[in-house]
Length: 315
Image (tube, rainbow, N blue to C red; front, side):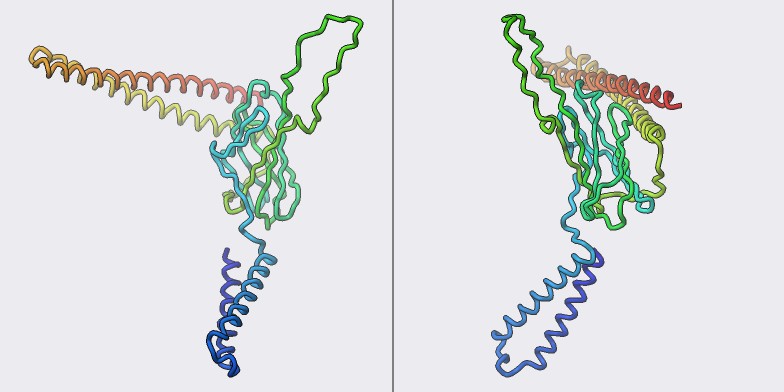
């Protein structure tokens, strides 16, 4: 931190001046260097403590801020939902941040509400925020009124656990006996929470991050998803064309090998058969890769269709 380094530099300068003054005006009983050592160390300790305390008071300590990071390796698991940050950005002028999450929800939790609460760690204040469902795969958290001197955002996310342990069997025996009531779990036990931390130093600054309505946010990020999806499809289609060409080359290679079969010795034919088998395995591997990409294209095209339908429903 520039301010921190500046203050450390100032205190180092003060220390050098103090040390020079002590050296010039030292009493006779301090003429021995061994006697001087404790006094020098005492001065260093005092100056260091003062410098750290002053910098912490004026600028806050930069060492406490945590950052969860982006990507699937930093995912948080709730009751039936796993989620991680895809991208995050802040507009320091408007004091607004957008945090995009990718989510994966179990079938029982598809329609269950997801909750989020944002706070600023240094100032210990809750911040206005709203969670916008972009699609089945993404949710967006919009945070407002972030203070100028913020150091770390703490985002609590959570959902209620779906109770699927209810016994469906109805007791028809002992009709004169009162049914036993099952003990219900406490509400606190049914809420599963996770935490994301965002450090100021890890938060990209974006200009003109305007406040939008839920529909506008959905339109903005759904359009980005479609653009990204079309880019992936184009890449996969290009891969398929390339792999088909490779399969054609492999097929020609097998034909050349088999053409010389009658001219080879027994040992050479055995080696040739091994080569043919190896090339055939390579062809099969390429064919599996082609099928995998075709399935991925079909799945992404289906997602694009759903996103386009969602965009049309906004109009």
